Image (cartoon, rainbow, N blue to C red):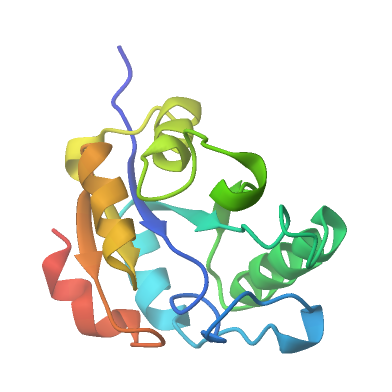
Length: 163
């Protein structure tokens, strides 16, 4: 059997783009953070890079899938220009007050489990970097080591926690 892949899952807001305090609803408010060198290093160490993000603003009607798609395409493109390949985006469009319960909204592990299955990832060799306790909880529930950072904290400051 082929070896399983290892991955670093990344929360989006406050990790890959500037935290706005609430939802980033408009493309104009979407500001990519400079974590290029840190993510390039992880990629060079053999980690696949996957985004796992709650996007409850969709359920609330604050923005739509097209706007979200623009943000993610921009994020992917900016990182590609720096030699970093973000393999995929997993997002939860639900919000408990609007769509009820789901399996994918962090702290539930659904987004990570989707990525683990789709890309044949070994959770025990993988990590989830996020700026909320729910990110770490989702990682733990998926068997992935969670790393908690402050919003907008450079990822380079936690590279030593990743084998």
